[in-house]
Image (cartoon, rainbow, N blue to C red; front, top):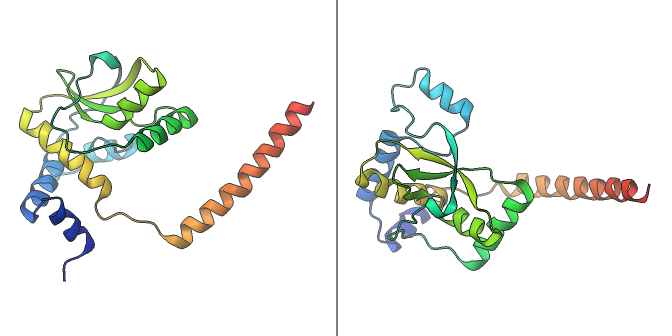
Length: 181
């Protein structure tokens, strides 16, 4: 019996060959959302990875970015608003991935949120040397990887949310005490 991910992929018109192609593109071109420490480890001896195509964060004008017109991933207004709230709370934590020509490869929703917030410059990483086919394949791979095969451990989630709620109440009390002094 096929798994839920297989059913979802089939419903989206993505067959096993496309999944294999996406996985191969990730192996061939790397992944843009890996920590600097993991990047260093990958550079120091991984035989299964090419050199990092995007290894330096730059700040670019948002007007310089060209959204990919054929991006199949959609974003609701609520999702963009949630991303904007996240950026306001924690700042910009993941650079957008762009081609050397400014074409947006990954980060379309973050760019929409940035526009909503009036942010004029954002962090980007440039995927140097990629062909148009590589960029197009990675747009699909990056979006599909974010939704395929992931889930929550309900018990760990419950514990973490409970601890955060307690921590949040303690922080609010500390802030109130500081403000009253």
